Image 1 (cartoon, rainbow, N blue to C red):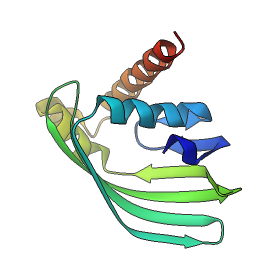
Image 2: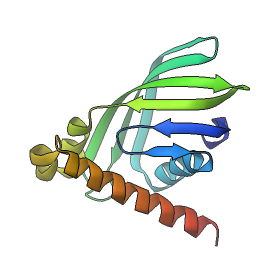
Image 3: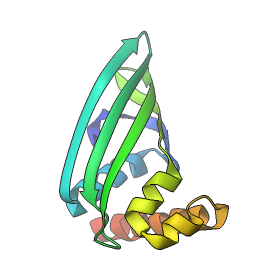
Image 4: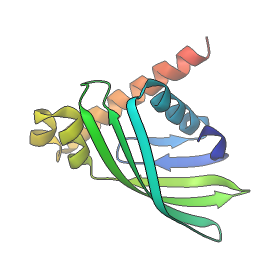
Length: 134
């Protein structure tokens, strides 16, 4: 995945808002650390410089060891044969219930939990990137 992104790429989903090389780093980090990881995709369409896909990921969430089945709809914009914009949409509350258990059930709808998850994910990515440069 890392090689599929344009140098000026922008990726967003309910957890991440990334630019450039950080996008490749997140995919590399997630796939290296993933346990019981599986991805399936379907409904791929490309028209001109845009595309859409539906994909699903199954994995154990590393922080809790809980099983997650994330259902994602993606939109893409391409430039020079590479992904320039990538937007993944999934239900954060659905994801948080699976990944976090009761805290996700009770607070998954709240902005405060989403901000906490975003901050933790950003810290994990920064640590991973820093470790790669050593």
